[in-house]
Length: 68
Image (tube, rainbow, N blue to C red; front, side):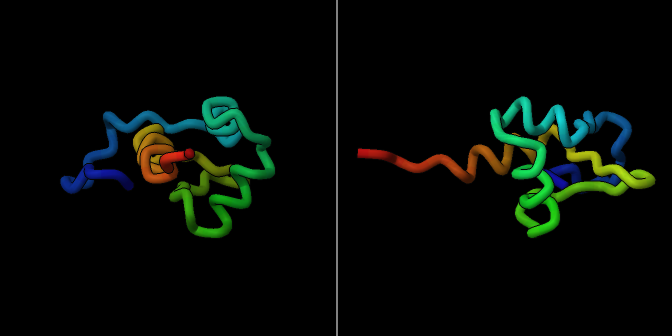
């Protein structure tokens, strides 16, 4: 997860799949595909997933490309 090397996750903000989809302006299924494909790190909590806000921001930052 991100750059938190100390292992302390008390300050990490976790988002639900629905919240990640809203931030990224994509469907929940797209987020599930990214998680299951290993492109977006996630933590499994029971039957659901949580994604750190920092990992979402890192993914979006890496996904930028110059058009035109």
